[in-house]
Amino acid sequence: DKLNASSNEAAVSLEETAATLEEVTSNIRHTTENIAKMARFSYDVTHSAQEGEKLANQTTLAMEEINTQVTEINQAISVIDQIAFQTNILSLNAAVEAATAGEAGRGFAVVAQEVRNLATRSAQAAKEIKILVENATAKANDGKSISTEMIAGYENLSQNIHNTLTLINEVSSSSKEQFSAMEQINDTMNKLDKVTQENASVASEANNVANEVNQIAQQVVQQTDEKEFCGK
Image 1 (cartoon, rainbow, N blue to C red):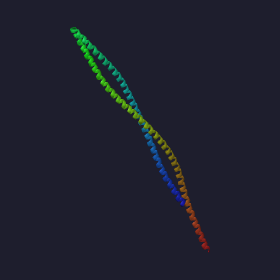
Image 2 (cartoon, rainbow, N blue to C red; image 1 turned 30 degrees about the horizontal axis):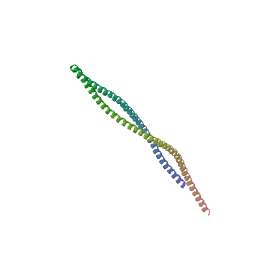
Image 3 (cartoon, rainbow, N blue to C red; image 1 turned 45 degrees about the horizontal axis):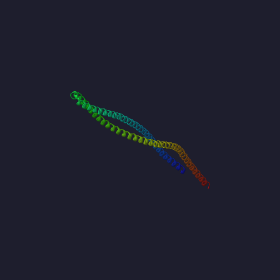
Image 4 (cartoon, one colour; image 1 turned 90 degrees about the vertical axis):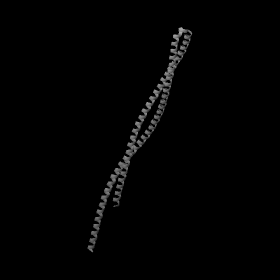
């Protein structure tokens, strides 16, 4: 009876242990699946960060091109200023010469004044254009600064994601190893449970046989006692 009870208790204990191990294995499996999802999400974020960094670099290059063109425009404006200044001086000299010529130079003086007015308006327009270009340059530089900060931010983000992916891969590798080990343990426990169940069955049969033998022995003893009593 003790052997039978012990075998049954061992079988029950192994069944409970196997159920617990199966639950742990299931949890590890789910953890591994979630880690794989995290890895895929991190790869997607990395791709987006790289695209953002690429666009920021393109923006920076465009801003630099704008600055180059603005420099060329400023140079052209400087030439216009110089021409307007020289034209203004020449028209002023022409007006003086026309005044000394008296009536004969009156028509020429009118033309010289118109030329001078045009030179003045050209110089004023050049100044206004220069102001607009300077404002555009300031905006372009602001955009370039923002793009530079964005690039630095994307680089930091990419590095952080890379570090996170490294950790995820390490954890994923460990989880896979744990899952493999738990499967081996489960397989071993199932085999052990099968053997224990067989032992319990054998123990139960042995217990039944022992009970039958005990009953037969008791019957033999009883019959022997009865014969001895009758002989007396």
